[in-house]
Length: 291
Ligand SMILES: NC(=O)c1ccc[n+]([C@@H]2O[C@H](COP(=O)([O-])OP(=O)(O)OC[C@H]3O[C@@H](n4cnc5c(N)ncnc54)[C@H](OP(=O)(O)O)[C@@H]3O)[C@@H](O)[C@H]2O)c1
Image (tube, rainbow, N blue to C red; front, side):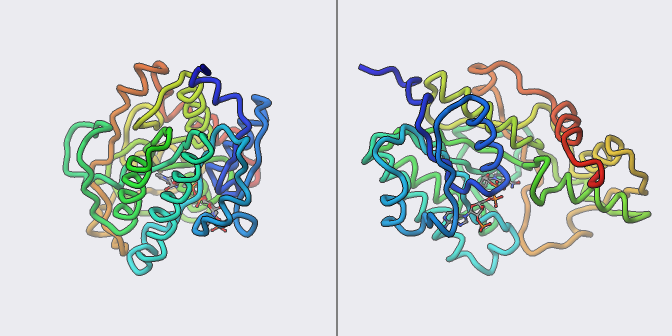
């Protein structure tokens, strides 16, 4: 009988391989010399079960689903489209994994919670999303849980990387271009380096862990505190002023307190590195002209 951690030797399929997290996974698997295929649109469309069956073969031991509808504000008007990708397609992937005996690593979000807590959200806290994106991601979680496939369901928050559009890249650009900036100071959470997320996820898989986990950087901050640190580390100067969510209106409501509890993950892997350490590492990898 094979050990569950054998699965981590691959071969693997990375779905949504061209996205922010997908790229971190491809680099990680290359570094670990784990055989894998990176799949994304237009080759693979996970909203089509036939496309999944065609591109994810029976030899695949684990599937990493980095594909998602991630436009939080756009989802308010496009909830059906977001649901097809974040819920229905996740169900198709989970069914396929069950059929071929592969483990599914699926990603979800802090936005499945309402943000009304004042202590970090445990993995088994009841879901109560307050926006359309959160509803579709919560439905996706339920599809994974009810599929009967072998899975790791990993919630994360405030993702950033040396590539792709993300808060760190945007703040570096804005603090370089502008004299003054307003950033929200009444939403608290945990930033997450995509590279840290991928490597901690693989470590959980290698240990044979299954079920729901949270992975973020350690520590917590507001968007304002995050922005100030990004500016400091990139050497830019700008007058960043704290503002409230009420002053900075966007279509989708955001949870005020989005801190994911890490105790289950830290019991398995040890302490998560502090967000300032991961941020320095990511900014250090950015092209000099983008800082
Ligand atoms: N970004 C965050 O701050 C954040 C926070 C919490 C949780 N998460 C979760 O983390 C995961 C990764 O997020 P991310 O920011 O890395 O996502 P991302 O950069 O938006 O990448 C998603 C990738 O999936 C692809 N894709 C879209 N529709 C597809 C389909 N039908 N079939 C196959 N691929 C498809 C996209 O292609 P196109 O670009 O061509 O559409 C894109 O390459 C997601 O589950 C997300 O919900 C993200």
